[in-house]
Image (cartoon, rainbow, N blue to C red; front, side, top):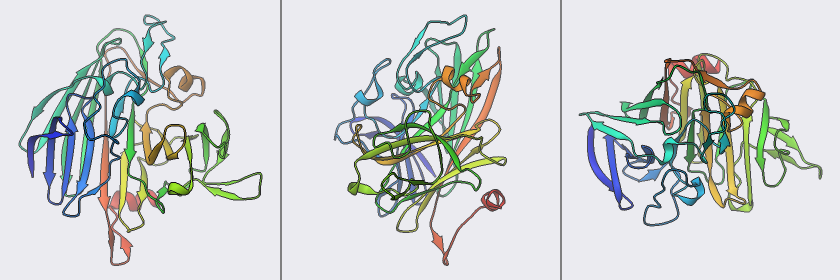
Length: 332
C-alpha cells in the first residue's frame, strides 16, 4: 500500500495504491476522487472529462463550467438556492454547493489521507478520511460538525459520475420500486416531481423502457431520479454491473444516509455519457425542497455527525459474484 504526491491532467494530486487498484484525489479541487483504476489493464471506473488539461473551477462558478467529471462532495446543496431559515435566511448558495470547488487542507499518512474544509456561508467543518479497507475496497469516513448555536438544514450527496457503456445496468435493493423524477430530457420518466414505478415504464407508443440499462450512443437522453422511500436495512447500497462481469458497488449507513438517487446520462442537453450513483442525506437537490417532501436532514447546534461511503470493485468468481456477508444479508 502506498500514498504519494502526483499530478492529474496538470494539477496537484494525491495517489493511493493497493495491489491492482489506484485512486487519485485532488486536494485543491474539493478533494475530488478523480480517478479509480484497476491495473494492469487500466480500467477506469470514474467518468473522465473531455479535455487533456484539467478545467479548474473556483467557488461560486457553475459545475458545468469546470471539469464536470469525477466523484465530488455536494454540500450543503446541489441546485443553487436561497436559504429559507434564520439566521441565514436569504443567503445564496452556489450551484452544486460549496465544498466541491474549495481547496481542502490535507495530511498524508503511510496508508491513508485526511482532508478538511470549512464552510463559506455556513459555519461548519467537513472532514473525510480516505483509506483502502482491502484490495479493491476504498473506504471514505466522514465527520461533519456544526460550529454554530443554530440548527442547520443541509444536503450531503456523493456526486458519483461513473463510467458507463452499452450493456451496463443499475442494481439496487429489492423493494425500491417507486421513484421521483427530477430530470428527463425525453420525458420517458415524466416531468420534475412526477413519480414512476422503477424500473420498467410503459411508453405511450407501447414500448417498454427499462431505466436500469445504459443504452449508449443509440440514445440521446438524460434521466435523473430519487427513490421515494429511504433505503431498506442497515446498510444501503447501489451497484453498476458491467458487460465484462465486473461491478462497482457502493455501501453507506442507511440511518445517516437514507436516500439514493441515480442518473442515466446518455448524451442529452448536458452531453454526458456516464452513470451516476448518488447516496444522499436529502433528496430533490435543495434543502428547502427536500423539507417540503419530508426528505431533509438537519444538523443541530454544535452537533457532530459521522458516516461512511465504501466503494467496492469486484468480478465474477466461479460463475457467481463475490459478495460480502453484509451484501448477502442485505439482499436477503
